[in-house]
Image (spheres, rainbow, N blue to C red):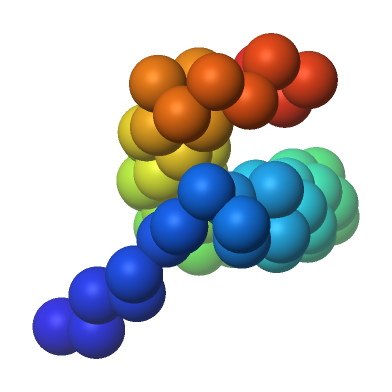
Length: 69
């Protein structure tokens, strides 16, 4: 498992990257016809949303106020 160190300086970049991944998964889910693949995408989306939640909480704890939920 790869753990990336998130700092106050790069938290916005990490949030941007997670947002792009979420957007990509939503588009894939909408265009996918396979039910099993849709379920895998949904599980991946849950993980990405949790990552985003953690990043937002970290940003707020560091005093960064202009992060989007």
